[in-house]
Image (cartoon, rainbow, N blue to C red; front, side, top):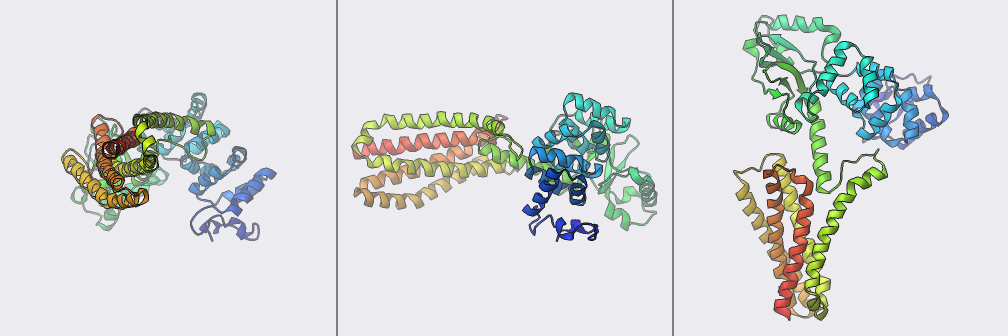
Length: 469
């Protein structure tokens, strides 16, 4: 049973109605149906009782299962605090739709419950006129923090940082710091792991984990306890920030402006989101599709996929042109038409394998100029080894089927050569694109597939013409 039911009164609402999640933490179909029924009936109190104890991430997940009409009803009955925590969790397209339904005064109240980074992410999705109304309804400090965050580049550390953090001057001791933290009350950041020690210019000189602070004696000086920190510049790209967190196993890090002054912090929960977002982007781009989610319309999905399919169509025409060059040979030896897709298909799969490994290595910075040559020749050896394993299998099978050992030799040789081509292009394409400052995940797959198809047909049919005719 979900722990979200703990605070409900079973005499008022049947406890089983709140078994929202199954053992895999996925919303149950029965619970979604209850929400839909309450929405259809316009039963706002029923909706609120069903939703108020759900985790914001589960509410966001629920929104993805509902139609736009049902979402419009549900969002009006979400308590302000739950609405605030749910908005950052929503898929982008669903969030934009939901924001259109929320009155600007309600939204302004909800945003005040969020950290500045989450509030800025929500405000960013508002239309200009709605954004102006919402910001005007917010207290000046909250409004200034959001506007300042929106002033940074979209994928920068400045945009993703939260301005709420805890800092202490270098001359304080542990007792001073603990007393200061206790006196903050509601002004404490909702989530923080470190106290940043700053000099008189507000430049961070070290960090002190809360766990270490609480174990130390009150008279211990912060400068004696603090640890070195990894500073993040406000203009650093979010992908680079995620790499720093992953490499140095950080939980939080201070963000500094151009003058080196402490202006915010980034915590690991934000980094998890960035890593997932970047991985999702790379996977989609390798497949040649745009960013899609459950809220995407058919027209949006088509617009994202058609350009890449058009490019694939062009590359397929190139393969067809190669086949046309050997039309007479194929007419003379019909078996070639049956066997040639095998060479190009295996080459395409091998190229995709090399490509995926290389793109991942570039993304994790395991591949750079110091080991690029070694990596390239390693993939060539892998391609050659794969060829020597597969060539005898297909060669013997083709020779027995066609009762011509020469045909088996041709397809086996073509297999080995095309796997070498696949290994070469699968490694060199993303490396070259990265050197040219292009995203290697964007167009590599199309180029690799086109190349392996082109050379697969050319090598196989060319060898067949030489050997068999």
